[in-house]
Length: 543
Figure 1 (cartoon, rainbow, N blue to C red):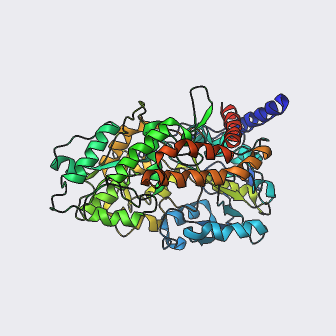
Figure 2 (figure 1 turned 90 degrees about the vertical axis):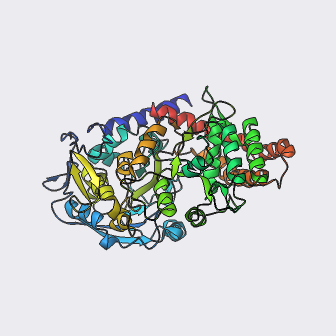
Figure 3 (figure 1 turned 60 degrees about the vertical axis):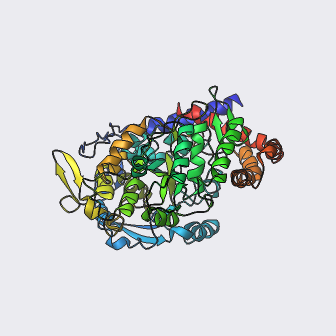
């Protein structure tokens, strides 16, 4: 067993060594477009007489790549790829044409999974419907192993990985291979946090709360003291638009309540948030809030449309949502707001200090998705080179800022977008901003200049309080996969159902011990052991 672990670690180290031949210091400064040094000794021709060096064009002769994806994260109507001018400029520079199939994001998984299962009708590049932690797709043999291509052509990806040091170990299979190109998330910037109605605080002469106890008192005041001043009892002290946002509040109790709910103690041992005493206290707090009408009764099933309607009517006091929604809410509360000069109305808050001394927001997993290359692709070197080019500063700036002199100006070395243009009639998304059908890296710098200036200031203040999840996306071994397939889905479903049941009072908290016993009988200990093994292996590979 020791020999096997050593072999895996050596394989992972070899891969990291291969891809770090071309490095540079990534900058989050949107006005600092620094050329990254390229080690041309590692570059190899993608076609006869042409060497890819990390910049455009990708090939000397025009390259056509077939592609299937979904523009995830935007409305299904924003899929007019041919008219996404920012992306079309990336293709023009790269000398690439995409035979593009964009599927509705609402049904992408349902549409692509049967095609993956059949292994037919697949293009050169496929956006994966999952992070494939059980290696179902890796083991299918449908996709090209990319390990050697990373070593030869990952000019831009290599230095992106330097600033995101967990990503390569997360992507590497237990036997030391790499099959995917990632979407690299903003892990510790622009993540979900509390937004509070500053005008309501001012109207009631209240300070921004700093602890969970103070927060409860503010919610009570919002409920009982008519903070919107319309003489009606129509206030929603706190409104959630998705259960995942509610679960994120567990961080103030030192909990991880999304996914399987495992967190690491100081000794690196995982434990279940959902069966801890801190979780019982969390449930008591929010059950009381629910009973007193301080949160929306449909907190587990409500939607963005529902909160937006209430926000426009000035009936929401606090929301837990991504920080950049502060601009969305500002425009709903005041359609005439000047996005360049006016102040926010729903203002971001520092995390609350919980009853056990925890004070942080839980960040995002650095990996937000994967793209694969079909094993039957005729030009894998060129295709991989294009995927790498998307991570270059040139392509990245086009995807997030647009076209110079049309969408932004450079003033005193800084990119200054036309905010009014970006935010009117969904312009930025229609041009290809943060296109969900491409692998890419998301940076705080993109958001800093794309929203009302105060949001960047708040994000910088909150950043130091943000913390990566303990358990990150990576691959399970075959024996671990058996445990995951047997227990994972049922236990996660049980935890989420019981969370809602406890908060709403449908299940009395006096039965908490019985609930814990039920979770154990469903295989919680075996599941924790599988996650523990993967956690230790991934941590070792990343060190």
